[in-house]
Amino acid sequence: MYHGGKDIDKTYYNGYEPSGGTKRYEHGTGLYLTADIEIAKSYAKGSRTVFAVEVDIDPSKDINRVKLDLEGLERCMTTLRYGGMGKATAKKYMDHFVETANGSPIPLAWIVNNLVNDGYAKRYAKAINQLVIESGATHEVSTYASAKLVIVYDFKIIKSVKKISGK
Image 1: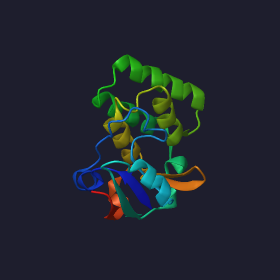
Image 2: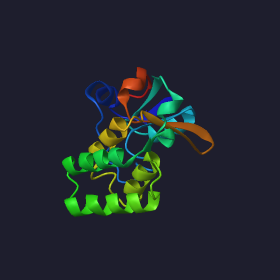
Image 3: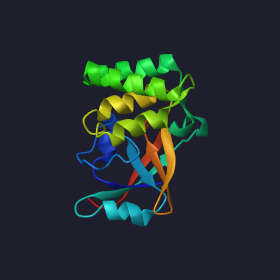
Image 4: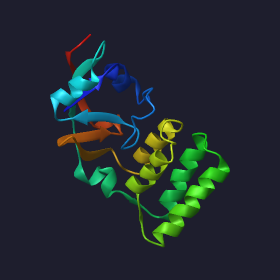
C-alpha cells in the first residue's frame, strides 16, 4: 500500500495527528493508503513524499463490520464529550442513533459517517479516531478511483513504513 503526503514517519512514530485539510475525511479520520502508486503520487506533489506502508489487516476489525450496542454507543458519546463535543450535541446524536437503530446494534461506520457528513471530522478528529479504536475497529477497506483504499485508524496495525520518493 502507498501513502502520498508528508510527515507520515513522524505521525507513525508519535501517534495519530489529524491533517490540516478540511475535506480529507471522506471515510473518517485516519491514515489513507492506496494500492495505486499513481494515486499516492498525485497526493505527494511539491515537497511531499510517497511512502510504502505495510499493514496487518484483520478483516473482522474493519469499521464496516463493527457494530455497537447501547453501552458501546454511550462509550462513544463519552469519548466525544471528553474530546470537546458539547453535551447538547452529544445528546442529539445519542437520541438520533438510538431512535434510528430501533433496538438493533448500531454500525460504527454509520456513526462515523454521520459525524463526518455533519462537519465534525476536523473539529473532533482525535476524539473520533479514539472512539473508532476503542470500539474495536482498526481500519476500513474501500475503493477510490477503482483502486483499493485502506484507511488506518489504529497505527498498531502498521508493520513498516518506507520512504520511496520525495524529500
